[in-house]
Length: 429
Image (cartoon, rainbow, N blue to C red; front, side):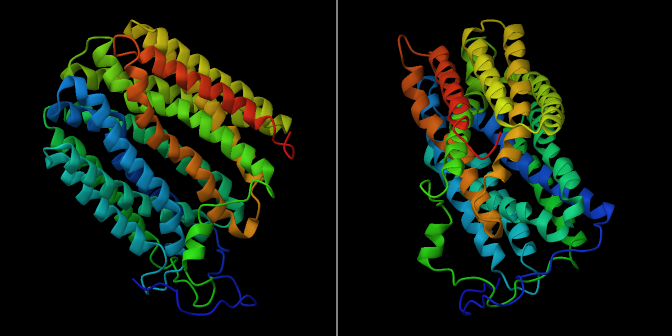
């Protein structure tokens, strides 16, 4: 693929690509949603279920928490670094195939290859290598997908299309848990089938968007230097304090959420006593009720916040609700109580996600660099996925070991601190 990295910047020229004017056809919107579903399915199914089960197959029980933490943290770190970098490279691509399609297809191909390594690998270092490749590849795809809405959808349609595409995260979580249950007898297929669906979904989008994906115009961007690489990860907190406070709040809230997504499998196995065959069914049930509650919270929160014109009170209430859900998980000793906790947590998370995105859009420093700045903000989502698995083994080791209460209460405290951080944002009510 060709990158626009040698041409001098022409600051007086037109934008790198012309924004779309005609309404997007229904088949393009459907293809965008399907591609988002497929990419999330490929990356979230291992995070929620199958990676923990794969680690459980190859390491002793006493070492599996640490081993899973190592695999997840390396993958999450590379995902955090790769997403904004691949987004910037995609922006600059001058290939005749367009700016996005090379990264959509190439990223999912690399991601599928990484999932194959994880499915067949027999040691923790091999799992780390495979998961690192999978995360880098799929995040290259996700970076290009994120840019497809402003690229391909006119402004007057973007809110509706964003809502349809955003629902795919929740649907992919349900589908991923269901596939893990269906293929519980063949863990290799539980990795490869979601990856293959993801590749097929992205390929459909690549075909549908063929005439709309235009290459970047030479000279539209700064040469991609080391300075530009470093700028991909930075927004000055001194010049933009509201952005910084929102980043801090998001980081802390997602730290709490990562405690649930990363360690539910081992929690259900160790505290509830479910074996490897039963736990996939229990994770599916928990995910199903959590996602249903998340969708409900998202619909309610978005409508109420838009009507009132206020964001911060809803972020406060939702973050505290997530903390309560985590505290209930910490004290749960029955599967019924676990499901109650998932409902509380899911509804609160949906409320948070619906309002926080609107708050984030209001505090972006520069509309001309919204993709880059959103990439920085998304580090607040991704970094906890790397840090929590590093911290978790120490929390689980408190006392006699297996101290999931300490882990989930740590997440609850983080969510409370995140709720408080957002209250320091001044430019949004």
